[in-house]
Image (cartoon, rainbow, N blue to C red; front, top):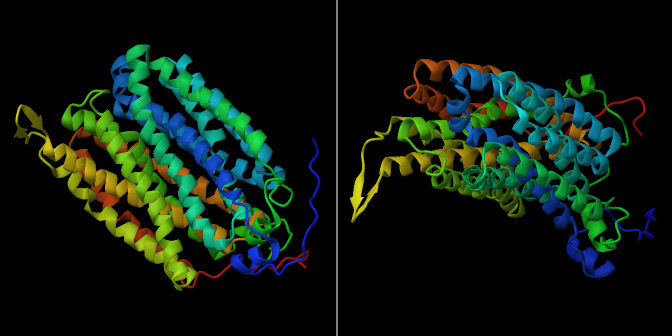
Length: 460
């Protein structure tokens, strides 16, 4: 049924929410329902991509993969994800998130299930490529949705909440996958996680709509959503976006951060298997602990910057201070691979590998800090880039991050083939300083957090 635009009440777009409620009545909060949908989509997105990481020891033993074979498979995902992030991000700006995100979820769900039919490195590489190409649409669509449904002062929190879905997906996967493998086989893990996307599609079509016309959004909430001045209604070419420092902030930020996160996602299960001898079921507890911590980091990083801004800090200071705190929390991870895996402690009749849990804590702290850093990095875009170009900028940066991940994944496979355990010392040490360097470069590019200044012939 075609929706009709509700009758509008003229109101100062910069009016404070309490004043708006006095004029228009109590405000609805439907924007948080939309945020919840994005959270679920991101959860499914990460479950589909994380299954192969959880199954790495099982599949490597079953098919005889080397670390380099595995690195080539995940590189197929990264290369396709780079293209998908750029192209699908642009598609979101052209056709909107309602249909754009629907298409992306449907395609990635099909390719996720398609892994069950693979039996060679090439077959898995093809499935990973299809998954990566379509999954590239999730974050551009989600950031664009946040920019359309939330005022600037709430975007970091909303981004942190939906971004926490990546952690929940990574948390649920090590719980669900071992159970499916034990009860059925490894193919069932791909079938079940892939099918979840089609359930989400039904909810999306029922609940999503234009915030300006949605029947569940009243005038007070609509005025709240539109607190910020409107952006120029123009189409911005990619090459023009690359001329602006705001684009380069996100491009550089993702190029330095994404390879580290994907290293956690794809190689931490292998680290636990090779260093501590954990099997698929035994690593469930450590992985669940790590991703529980990342949930806290994702929401906490977004909350911290929003809290500082609400207390009167500038947006620039609030965002970058939160990112600095996250960057410092990553530093201790270099110790994770230096712990002696043979040391144990007896607690009654139970033997506790306390260095295992110390390593888990250090990895969880670093991974949670990455998510807090990432939530604010995404919000830097919605702070400074016109709504019409948000998905395109996110797409450019996501492409850069995925491309930057490919040589890191190749290097990881090469190092671990030569030094299966000691190689992790090198890799964790690189991760420990990456975020401080990342933030330094971001600050040098746009020290004052200035918004993008558009100068187009057709701009009003």
